[in-house]
Amino acid sequence: MKIVYMVLCAFLLIVDSLDMIPFINYWDEATILIAPVCAIIANRGKLIFNVEKQKRYLLLFILVAIGILGNLFSPGIQPHMGATLRDVVAFIKFPVIMISLKCISDGYGVKQRHHRDAIWAGVIVSKIFTVAAVAGIVLGKIVDLGFYTGEIRIIDSYQFCFSHPTFLVSSVVVCVVLLVEGGMKKNRKYVILDCILLFMAQRFKGYAFIVFALALLFVKPRLLNKLLSFKGKTKIKRKYIIPVVAIAGFIVFMVFRRRFATYLTWGMTSARLALYMVGVLILRDKFPLGSGFGTFGSFLSGKFYSNIYYMYGISTVDGLGPDKYNYISDAYWPWIYGQLGILGFLGYVILIVNLIKKQFGRLKEYDHIIAFILLWIYALLASTMEAYFTNGTGVVLAIVLSVFIGIDNTTAKGEINNVEKKHNS
Image (cartoon, rainbow, N blue to C red; front, side, top):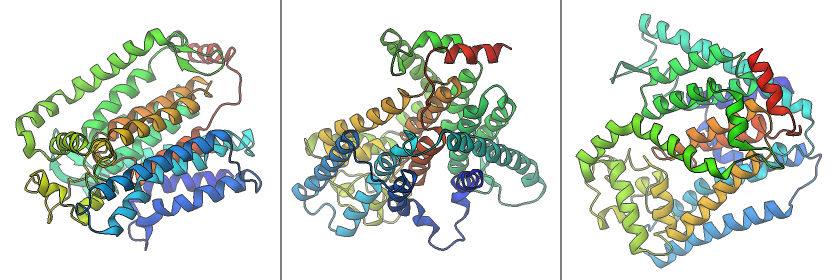
């Protein structure tokens, strides 16, 4: 199984650079069909469809129904049925894979040694990837291998073997998460190298992740003991929820404050700001359902150009036009509350929170908890700047959460204290 996990991990890290393989761009859609099959195989041929899974699928069905109703009540905005149907597929990718692979993350039919094998494989592959990518920083300057974009921010943006620095950032984040899960203290040097790679990519979400990663890398386990309750399910103690959110918000604001100021200066000429603002207008005007699938904020709403961009006067914004729509999916949440309205937005938030809480509640080991937190910090952060949950990165998130992080079968008692002793030794 170690070889299988190594191949899977390597594929998840470099899939964006494999565009020379025919039909590889459809790998994330194919995973919707593959994930349930893998879940059945992992459970020795049994199909687990418990009450919790039923509730999640029911909520997902309701969300899709809300979107379809939005299309029906707003006819003419997206006349291409193909765009609507393909947008539905993009929407359900992440939740379907997460729900399907839940039996793996819960350990149904999966032996504990297989989970250890997955962690081991993740660490080995992440170390190899990190060393290769760091070597590419120097090699790319000596020989023109296309490792640099030519875009100068603080320095020349580094993308390694990927088509865009964003994909490098996403893969490096996965490396950090897997290295932390495999042992934060013993893999600290590699994590620091990954932070260098994140800086070289010259992306603000990478900068923010560096701050969170370094903060959690050097935090004392006793602090986690203070913030979290391990009685039954692992959870943040209520009195610390607001301070933790406030600190996280402050970090994000400090990293992005200049970017925020720039967006405000650009106003509605900024594609991302236009998407957020117009999404709110659609939420108001199409209350409570939204405009429907394939109409706003998704790549397909640009490819099959939606009339809503004309209706709200943003078809002339750079990157949002019918002939140049490269920025049209530069934010995820306007996609949700614009297309699904307030009902769909609240339902989707409930689904995401449920997925986070259920898995987090069954993590007991210190390094696993930190890895889980880091991965979700990046996912939520990236979703404000890209269609994170509807493209391949969302599928990678689901697989890493389910297969490589999973849940801990150990009891909470003494676990964090034991880790603290290891860290102090």
